[in-house]
Image 1: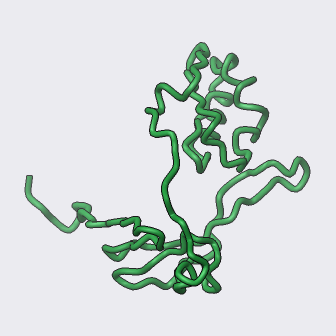
Image 2: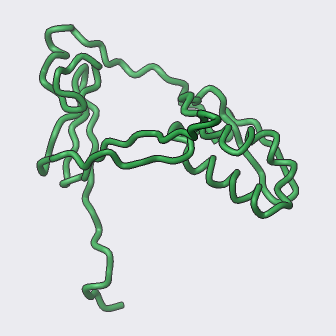
Length: 155
């Protein structure tokens, strides 16, 4: 296959987790501030909206301690607060954490421990109540969209 102008360029993005420090992002990775827009009546999340594209360099550091005065970027505060960035997580495979729920046209795998409480799973009705109704194309599409928008990877 010939490479041409219409071929996507392979990006060399890299994220490095430093010991007790920030994430080091390299490869000219774009960074956006996203907000969750909510329905004015039900207050459930309706969509992700780009609030701003943040100015970045080829390599930059993102705060991991939560104390930076220039969030989301690191300002070195992790040193002063003696941040302990030891990773403590269950590295069990998703398939083992998740409970499966089969519907007529869609299956849902749900690892509740990963929930970030963004509540996209409630948009248009609880996703767990909708899975049995996925013969309806609109309900099926809503379930797919809700799982896609879940920021934690729970669904």
